[in-house]
Image (tube, rainbow, N blue to C red; front, side, top):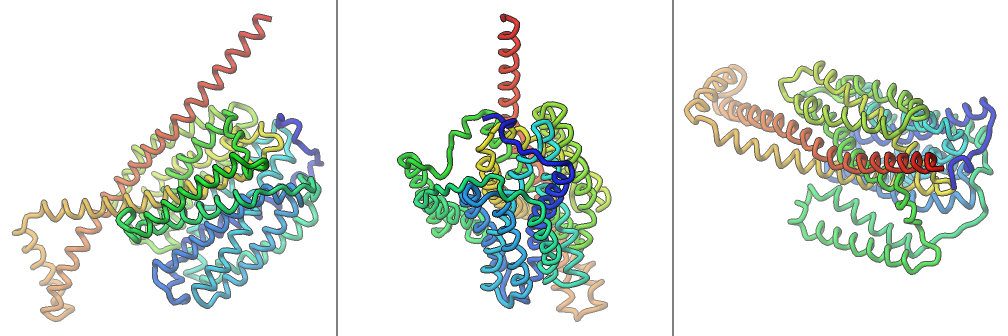
Amino acid sequence: MRSTEFYYQFSTFERIAITITLMIGHFMAILNTTVVNTIMPKLLGPLSTDLYGVQWVGISYMISAAIALLFVESFSRYVGYAFCYTTGLMLFVFFSFFCGFAQNLPQMIIFRSFQGIGEAFIMATAQTILLNIYPPKRKGTAMGIYSLGVSFAPALGPTVGGFLTEYISWRWAFYINIPIGILDLVAAISFLPFTLGRKKEFSFNFISYGFISLATIFLLISVSKGQQYGWFQSTLIVSFLILSLIFYSLYFASELISKKPLIDFKIYTIPEFGLAMAFQFFILGFVMYQVFYLIPLYYQNLKGLTTFQTGLHMLSYASFVGIFSVISGRLSDKISPEAILFVNFLILSITAIFLLPKLNYYTPALKAAILTIPLGIALGCFFAPLMTLALRNLGEKTGLGVVLFHYQRFIGGSIGIAIATNTLEKRTNYHFLRITELQEFRYINILIKKWWYITQKYFSEAYALKKAKVLLYKAEYIQALSFAFQDTFRETFVWTQIGGIFLIVLIFYKLKRLTFKESFYNSN
């Protein structure tokens, strides 16, 4: 079914009202995810936990959202997209209050899990509604507006999170959702078309859903906690990965013998969707999510900036993400989305190999902010053309396409962050060992004595010597970490090229199809 058949007409005012309503909801949900990731170090004391414990606040949210996504597509066919959106909004706002009120770690994990379910309902249905209310020639504009949330919100999160934690309270990272969410809920009830997508048919494969849910849980826990437990050196992580593989195998077996499969994988045989999703998996998960994770770490851990200062420096590329999200969306309606994605691929490749590796300890923070501007342009030119290309011709399978897009976002992003964490730690250790191996022992003693002489003015003689040795260790560690960041940024270039293979195949496919059409019409 072509996209022209799957389009509902609304007045200009109705379309604008619906668009703003959906944009506020999904922007709030994704922004809150990044804000909470930013404030996690501030939760250690209030929740009486350690750094490894607080990670479960993010893991529980991610798992519940990924699992709920797989349920939304079937459920929305029964109750309609608008009902699912408002349900998700109510869940998200309701449990935002309880997250802000949480007194301990178990409470926060439970409340964040329900928040994750709310986000899944919001994200899966907001995008589908937008695609349904815009005519085919303006679907790129719709996706440009939508991508403001998907790409701009994560870049803006550290700024908002830093401001709230440093000047108000970490609890307001959750409370701020309540007034915004209530206003958006009123708008949703007033403007959203509640008959849209509703077929009063509920067909759901609970067995397949159980298998893929368990597989997702074990996979996400493995990639999220692998660094803590030593990856394949840990029996627990290996066991979880094996269990994930077993449950994915059982899921596919269940789908093959089922008369009503949970996911129609024939959707991946549509070249525009299948190749676009492969491109998305590597570029979004293995490149962009790594960058979203690494840049705040660079500013805070290496440059020594506060959370709020980090957010301010990230505004440079975040602003360009927002601007080019809308521009690329409008362009997707006028020119080929493949052309925009190819330009995006070139900019991202140049940024990954030439600009990002220049970010080191000695790079001034302002220069670092300027060097990341092309990254913002690349991110802004990614989502709108990609989603326009992948989803425009799915017809009634649009809802399924949206769900799979976001499911891959969770899985790919989790793996990408795990790879970045592992690479950064390994390269830091490698460079630290190399730095200490190459040192001239005689000069090190001279340096320690000089620092010892200085620190004796403030500390006792014995303690001053320890301080001098600590200063040397810290200097060596900072240099090693600086080299490690450069190596990890360079690695994103490799993933960019792997993802680019699928884009190039897609471009050749489209060119071949156009050539065939031209020869067909000429022969007739």
